[in-house]
Length: 177
Image (cartoon, rainbow, N blue to C red; front, side, top):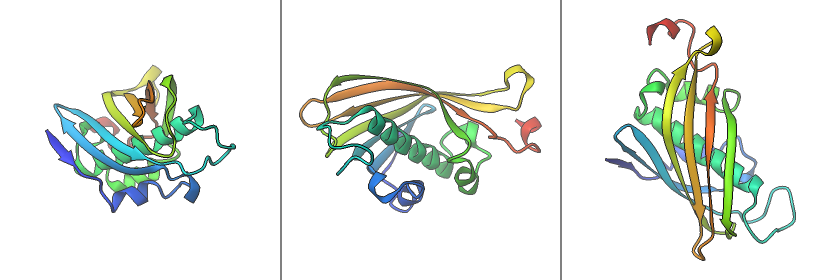
């Protein structure tokens, strides 16, 4: 097992696209073991970016927090060479793909108990990563992931997300993998 403490140079770069009041991810410890990559993270949402205080973590904030965890883990995986499916990517490739080419194909979640949005933790895991060429079209990477959130008072939320990485391969490299 390989463990990577929060990369304090990488984290602000991953969060660069977010408005200042929407940078919820504070730390992320990434673990790589047996071809699986996961992270344990800390978050804080001082004030919702779109609604009056609900008193708990809500579905929009779950999605934003998920995106930030996922973006960080994928960037760290590219930087450290943790996933062979991204083996041809550099960090420059990642920055180019981060917003336009990493798509949520399916997002599901269950709220078990309310979570304090001011201070909570999150877990993220990449379950499977596959390269596919649907219907003879351009190749893409499909990743099945899971997430969970919790707080000190027993709040809990979890779910699964399917990601599609489109335009993931340079045309010159498509035939080589």
